[in-house]
Amino acid sequence: MTFPLRNLLLFVAMLVLILMAGFLQSWNVALSIFNMGVISAVMALGVNMQWGYAGLFNIGVMGFVALGGLGAVVVAMPPVTQAWAAGGARVLLALAVGAAAIAAAIQLWRRLPRGAVRVVALVSVLSAGFFHFRWIFDPAVAAIEAINPAASGYLGGLGLPVLLAWPIGALLAAGAAWIVGKTALGLRADYLAIATLGIAEIIIAVLKNEDWLSRGVKNVIGVPRPVPYEIDLQNDPDFVARAAGLGIDAATASSIAVKLAYAGLFISVVLVLLWLAQTALRSPWGRMMRAIRDNEVAAEAMGKDVKARHLQVFILGSAVCGLAGAMMTTLDGQLTPGTYQPLRFTFLVWVMVIVGGSGNNFGAVLGGFLIWFLWVEVEPLGQWLIVTITSGLPADSVVRLHLLDGAAHMRLLTMGLVLLLVLRFSPRGLLPER
Image (tube, rainbow, N blue to C red; front, side, top):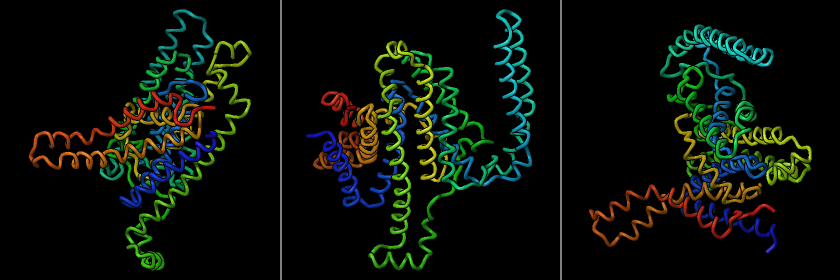
């Protein structure tokens, strides 16, 4: 079997699985799986750029995804005028003071000679900057969060079209990746993993606790959509008539139509990303990245700036993850910082990359669809399987009840089993790197 034919057959098999979900369950379920599968594929592409191209072990994926979601809120939500009047300008001033203090400390560190004078000057500037920052920042935040905290209590956004938030979310994640990369990319692989995980936890902790920025754990709801709302379609006589002509009730038809509109947007994004990623991989830049991945010492001996290239690909991969986060927040219509669990969902994205095929962009896309499909479908299938197997036992049987309670854990069991099988029988993934 030729490699392109194998690609085609595996993607056709994946499509058949989604179609089966549509026929056997509902088309709403199938389209929901498809849309989140596309977003998962985008995340997997971002991680594949870092690991598959350059061998960078980043397990802080959820931090960059969360920043992408924050970008959607900052760009698309309408501004809260009362909150801005109460303390918006002071928050901006405080952030400027903090940035100025950090910039001054960096300049002192560079210009002063080593010794006690440099240390004292650095500590003095940072301490003065910190206290000035808090002196301006704390009252401003208290004033903002006091403005109707049940419904707002934050500054809101810029009120711009939500599609503009997708590249902005990617830029936010890229900016954070530059800061992280400058400080952590010099670490060895295992220490880099620990550092990126810790930084992801810090990012998510900030989103959970800084209510003035994104309402914290109270969540931001009502993020604008780039597609129509179901209720608007249901109130459209023409749409209702067309749905009736197809024998579908208006509520179901509107939900399917909205999901199809999202699917069109998401597929456009993933196709463009896939084309760009493939073009980069086949270019001299891509060959250089793989050479660095395979032997850093030899690449450096040939004059390649390994650290600069690592930083470059780390920023690119994180930007793609941020884009996926903005897409996911747009699809959900809300930002919920509490759902970004670095250990749980970063593991899921890594399984997508490993199962699909590290270093292969098409493999990352396939892995994103397959693993998300299993993540959604395994629990109900496990429930049905356990009910079928234990149908001969009494309804109050301890064994039966215990097995039914454990059905929710079938997801994690299946992920581990799939990973083990792929690593045993196809160690380089379903679509290995050529």
